[in-house]
Image (cartoon, rainbow, N blue to C red; front, side, top):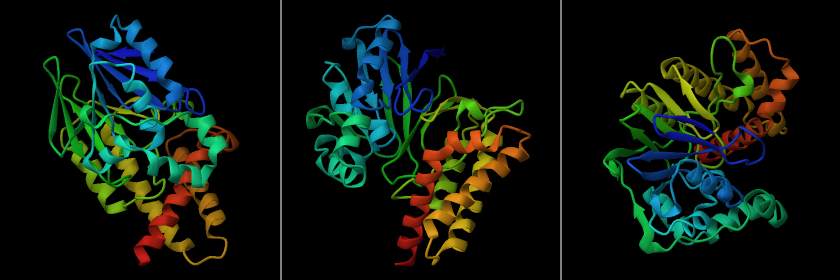
Length: 310
């Protein structure tokens, strides 16, 4: 568990090591989680509380960047362990936390009951009285440390990023892409956008990234995965890749094997961008690390194409 400026990075162990992070911010003896992983993650989150010298009753907030299950699936289970905490969530996500039946049904339709149980565990509701609906610009006080919720669509319409002025950093959920430590090189982190289903909107994502950069952040705390620095370089890379992904999608539209072509083209794009950064990692290793994200990005681009045509 990495700690910086009172920010504890917690590996939730979703899917594999160093893939999915939650964060515990500690200030003046009080704590706030940003994202929480799945129900399976709860023991790790509570262990992080103890390692930080706190008790569950010392946690005031669980702030969700958005309600995709790898970020928020464990919210109900975690809140049952935190007697004084309130949950902060985007207006478009609040109903899904109070009654997660639609979230569960949608995910089950795609993955099946067995996979939902394996990957996410039990998805429990959060009592409405404990839910704070956070509009754009909502401010959360953690024992005097202000955390600002900013509406950042593009990956999902129910997405906030959280600005922590004390560290001059953003907690970015999925808005600022994905960056895995296995792909780091002497040039620094490698990053890719995430267009996973079903609300990818490229122009909105470009605008959200620019909104984040307007505060000249020192670092970004990504859910997938961890703290990354030099945000300006990474933002430029994200902008270039969003445009390249959109161009690929448009070229593939109408093909009978559209999905397979998208998967192959995205893999080739990411390997090529990695090579431009001077990273000589074996191509098979790169594609193995990014396999799940390439598949989800292909699905998300297809959803965007089909929606854009309507």
